[in-house]
Length: 156
Image (cartoon, rainbow, N blue to C red):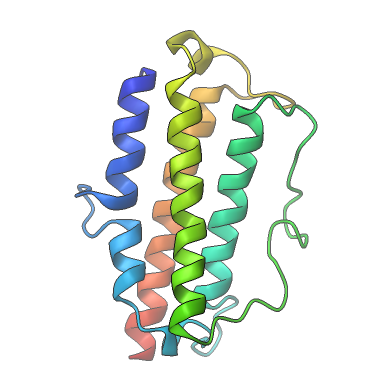
């Protein structure tokens, strides 16, 4: 894996034509806002909560790309899962998706300034490499996209 390949894969998962099906952004755009706050029975998080969880973990990657060794997200805390997330209107949905797109643009811009060697270096403040982090964020987006699409399929 090199930086150029990482950017290509990251963009493919987000808004192009990934192998697994419809991209993150295209999937989210297709889900009516009416379903964003609902939860099927025995489901822990709404679509809106999952989207902000994705945004926050992308924020983690951005902080690491910016050189912030101390930034962290502790699992199962407010930084990991925000409380009180509700998206009611098309305007709120649009703003949320714009925030998600901003994280995509920021990560790809910051990645473009990194060297291939950066991928083999440890992630600041962590015991894993930057390549592992980048694979992880793509897997994280894809994993939660599957949950989002399952929730939507159960609600519609």
